[in-house]
Length: 118
Image (cartoon, rainbow, N blue to C red; front, side, top):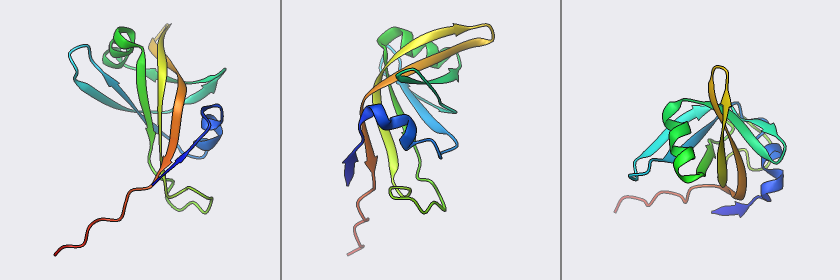
């Protein structure tokens, strides 16, 4: 089950979640996943990244963000994963690179209950 999140409200939707995952794809189609801490900045979310993530974003300008459910939370949708797709840019820093992702779609996602064994 998925519930749409207005991308403009994404930072607020994930504010209580301590970290998320950045998913990028290399030019030859290899996925790459990295745990990061996102910080709201302007219309986007910014995170420090390593060379591989920065290279992937520089090559295709896209990223998927994922935050696991907020364990122990009592707020609506705390038991849902947040998934967002966005346009991404690399921002050079003195100590490496960061990326800024501006989401164009986002959802609260709760998995379907597993099928019972026959």
